[in-house]
Length: 283
Image 1: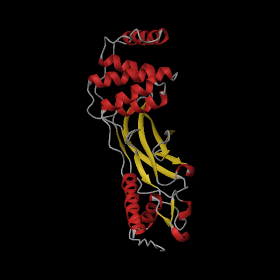
Image 2: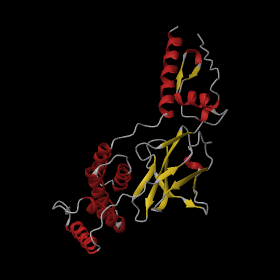
Image 3: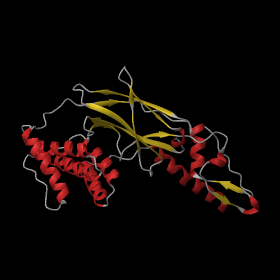
C-alpha cells in the first residue's frame, strides 16, 4: 500500500511540470527590465543587456523617463560592443527626448568623447526630435507544436505605414536556459519574412523564440514576444521511444521498475491526451 501511495504522489508531482511547460512566463514590467538590463551591463554581459533593453524599449506605455533611460543604456551597450552606428542612433533618440542630457563623469573619456561628437552632429542637423511615427505591428501565426529534430519554417508579416523597418530578426533557443540565437529573416517580393530554424534546435520539451523588427540603424521598434516573455512551441517526444526521454527511475522491490519521470508523462499525454497509463505494483 505504501508503494502505491508513493506512486500516486509522484504521478501528481510529475503532472505539475506539464502545466508549467505549456505556459509562457508572465511579462515583466519596464522597470523590472531596466533593472535587469542594468545588472547585466554592470556584469559586462553586453549581449544579454542588449536583448533586455530592446525588450524594454518596445513595451507599450513607456513614458519619457523610461525611454530616456532605455536609450541611454542602449547607447552604452552598443558602444561597449563596438557598434557605433547603433550607439549614435540610440543617443540621438535620447537627445530628442532630453536635449540637455550630457555624458556623466562616471563614463570613460572614450565614451564621453564619442557622445560629445554625437551631440555636435545632432546640433548641426538642427537638433531633430522624435515626431510620433505610425506604429509598427508584426503578424505571426504561432505553430501549435513542432516535430523534434526537424527543421522548422517560421513566417511573419509586418504592418509598417512609414516604412521604418530595416530588418526582421528571429531569436530562438531550445528550452528556457540557453542564450538566444539571432537570425535575420529573408523577405520575399510579397513582403513576407521567412526563416528556417535548424532541426538540432528543435528538441523536447519545448522551443522558445521571439521576433523583433529593427529600424535602419538597428534599433528595435516592434516585437512579438521578447527575451523575458518568448513565444513557446511544444515539442513532443518521439512516439514509441520513451527510453529516449529525460526521465528518472525508482526501483521497487522484486526487481520491478516504475517509470515516474515527469517528461515521460508529458510525452505520452502530448501524443495521446486520452491515453490510459497503467502502473503495475509487484508485491
